[in-house]
Image (cartoon, rainbow, N blue to C red; front, side):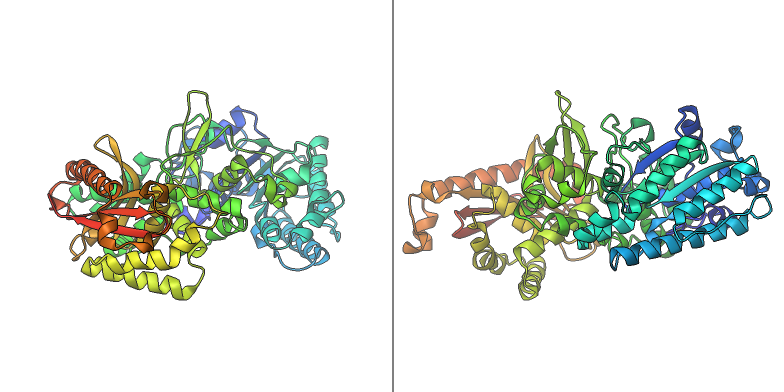
Length: 594
């Protein structure tokens, strides 16, 4: 098997080292066929945007024409190249190099210094071609003007590729909104920079522009209605431009299994693991093809071909950084509630459309953060994806996979248990439960530590869904389990399933199934349940009925799990009944256990 280009966005390096490259060069032909000369392409972090731009650089760079056959000969575009290949002076700007710290003047100075340094590198690289002197100015946009004039003077064409255009600006926004506002205001350095680029495009001084980023927020602020680029990120045609399809991922898994000299039948459980943790992204409302996160696929495969076992942690720490976006949304009650709702309800988030015009004022006006705004924001960062459309063409959004759900769980854990001591205690009790199957201490912890939070009127906790959110948060363990919430089994929905990872089946752990029931205090007809004994409370008709109903549902769901997983399933089943936010009773369902 070819080596894995994990973290490598240098196309030349990938080709020279004969590393894996999933061919996306057909899209270059599409861009040209559709006359897309000014594009804005948005995708979450670690989705291959930088590699895409590097491929385009090598394809269009006039200095790389002697390398064309080596780099592209066996690829789609090499078999049928366009007339434009290797005809441009290509300029690359990467805004991830910019610091987000300091005053506006300090950031502006670094911005100009960094871009001027890049332009100096480009001048040296193209010195054998450019016939006119390039002057350098304090403002990088003026240096770019001089450079582009030299390109035109040499009867050549120019292509500007901007990577992570919003990287440092987003960091500034999340930390210092006043500084960000000054960066994008009328005479701010970012707006000045892009006004210059727009002018160069209109004058024909700059021929093509391709910009990548994570959100359209910064572009909305710096353009203020001036259309610099064509937004292509929601188009069906480009849904799979970055990321891997299911067929491509399966082929990589087969190669990995063959490399490890493992029976090819083992690829089935690896396919299931990859699909559960890494698949699920749909970026266009009109598409139905789900895309895998390429960075995570390579993270998994890199470990597998080295050790012939899956990685212990399915979440790469490089993606754990995205928790900061959930923390940002969760600063206000409305944001916290949105994040909690993702875990506690079985319904997808429904919105009319993806918001594509964000501005700073939208971000700062937390009172205006409606469901559409929050869902769109999380969509752009890869925290939600498109599940489907309703008959009225409304979009249904949900977390794409378990890796992303893990980020939600970690954030909700901090909402519910802000004290590190409490989180440590809950972890200790969960480990005890997994080892000894003693649910009592964990239940008591929920009553003592978490029920007081449920009574907070700021949160719209929803009956049994509140319990599900709590136990999902407490029990999430991606080292040993795949956690399914509201999984469709036997034509019904199981509240919570913990299914052992294939590589954890040799441990002493069990698969687990939970069903939650919530009884309002009004139904018990008691204002204070601590006035009666536990035995008397359990004898109440509503409590007995709740357990009977839960046990019936568990029977249906466990049959569904048996059909899906067969003899390998080692299932323990629990019915949990909550009376208001005062008391919890539980019962392990022994009948029919495997």
